[in-house]
Length: 108
Image (cartoon, rainbow, N blue to C red; front, side):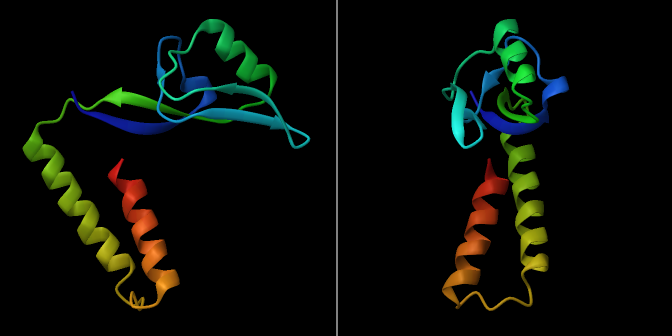
């Protein structure tokens, strides 16, 4: 089964959604609440996040697109990234790393 990650504002997150990345909330530099990747959210979790002023949550959702649809979407994303970085010198390590980081982020 294929999945993709989405970053949702807390009001859009519902019970039963699965975390796509670890969640950590810090207060005054100290982690006050955390949940692991893959955790299925409960109503209590959502309340705890709200109390601690969480804003966004990374959730994992089933990707119902066909392989062809996913391939076409990725081709469009690659083309867009190439347009964005067309003036960048990707031989420079910093720019190459930035390009790869954005590419990896968009791949999820």
